Length: 186
Image (tube, rainbow, N blue to C red):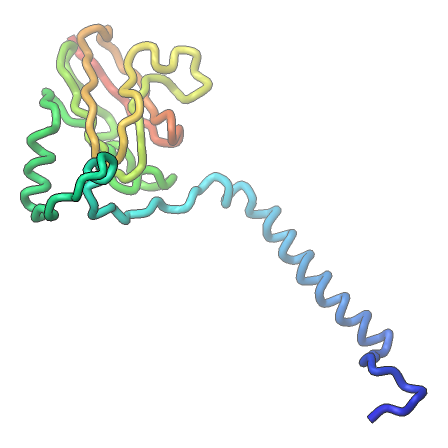
């Protein structure tokens, strides 16, 4: 119990208050130093993309129809393979390519004959492109070839008939750290 001359507020000594404030400020300073020192690393490496894929037929939902029974994995894959355009050579965008440091294009250095078509198969869940150039700041970027956006699980065809023989760098406009080389021979 307290007497009439005592307050109900818990009091502490100035020394203990100073120690508590010093501990809190010290922790904040350590956190700030860590965040500043690792800013470039945390900023340049995005988190991995989600590997969760919907099991619902989104096209059926968009038209307000009841989705059909989910087909087996084997029939889904064969149906997807049948819908893919045909081409002379395949360039694959690998799963997980959106995460910087992961393998991105396979093969990294592709050689084709002029006039051959290239099937660009996006195995990743994220959208990607195959665009000629060194990167977004290249003034000739996208002038020779560009697939535009290829959504996850989809494909596009790159035609080389109008591209002169030579070696060309390419990159993904969505993820500029994804790069490769295309050599076109006569």
